[in-house]
Length: 106
Image (tube, rainbow, N blue to C red; front, top):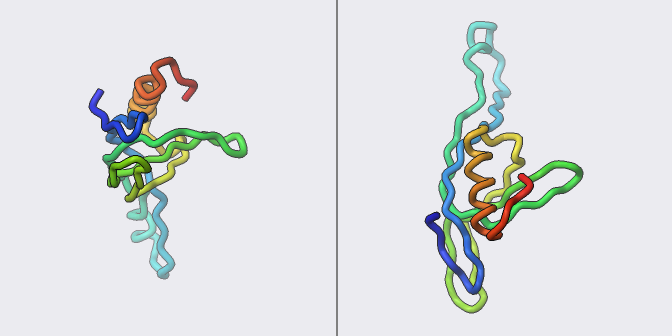
């Protein structure tokens, strides 16, 4: 799996598809209302980690970094797994397995 290594940690490269909420605060008729849909977004970067909070599972990603003894990370995102497509959840599961060197529970 394509990855980078910063310090002693491996960060797998991932490309994930997810659904983003769309909002509009203008007044429109019913014909315009039906055009309002969620956006299908693609994010490319590296998997930082996964965590659970309040019974919801999340992943964190980054796209830019500064290497060194204490690397720093930029272009960071956090996603609830529920917004990822089914295929992207499989990609994350595979990346976590690679990252940990064992099976994951995503």
